[in-house]
Length: 236
Image 1 (cartoon, rainbow, N blue to C red):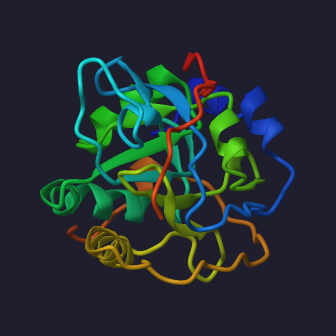
Image 2 (cartoon, helix red, strand yellow):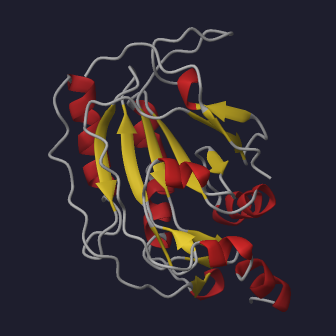
């Protein structure tokens, strides 16, 4: 059940900043360096830096570099989910081990604040790191677009050397890249092959937020050192 307080958290300044529709404008070429960033993880309260996971930059302590899926999702508040994204999040969570067993990591990036992201982690039983970007600066850095109160969803595979190897931007026909496509793309990255041609951007169409209580889901090319200057977000 959504309360008055929940509605107040939905219709906030962040909602109105993302109200007007702007389609995805990302023109990053496959093989280009992924823009570095830093966000707080709602699972651990630790600050996650992309360059600690990918690229040739040394880390302290040393971390094994690996492919990382940047999964930009569309959540309006801790109780209100995009109807096009909620089932996809649940399937991704159910199949998270398929990515882990292949030596990859998944970063689920939300546009809600850290306390709300923590509630989402608890309510949905999420296994992957959940990074909070309430200012939507990283969503804008990756140019994924926005509409009706929240940024649009998008997925990017970043290889262990820090280069973008797969990109899927929102379209109404395929709002999110299917989990099967993401697994196949990862297997191609690991084998050294190009995952697939870049996806096109279709016009943005409206979707209507739904309450989490109303949802019933059946079952469930080589890189130099990353730039030193990353984009930092307080996360709260």
